[in-house]
Image 1 (cartoon, rainbow, N blue to C red):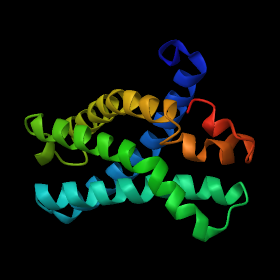
Image 2 (image 1 turned 90 degrees about the vertical axis):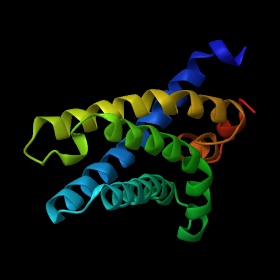
Image 3 (image 1 turned 180 degrees about the vertical axis):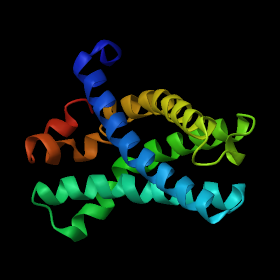
Length: 161
């Protein structure tokens, strides 16, 4: 009955919020850089997506380093745990901002810029939540690193496998 397991939902929400934090920082920084530099839509989206992945992976790597893992061991774990979630968020986020009339042309001092980005991130969260939940229920995604973050190797990452 994994579909009604409240601990699975809590873990998926936590994983999605974790992912959203990294994505949001990367997105905001990327869009601020691109807007300030006067770059076009393609460059703005590319730098935002790139930085979202960098920040998303970095958050996981820092947590794994704090849990005592060696740096060389953290990158494969971050890639395994975050890639699908970040990709889902970035597709939804980028498409949303592109579809909102004027959002890509709005300046940093324009409410449309911030409202469209906030709305896009909210939609991205709800798109990534079922992805994370599905992955965690199968012992993938953030389940791969959960044991290091919460149980320091006690096997909790595999309880839903």
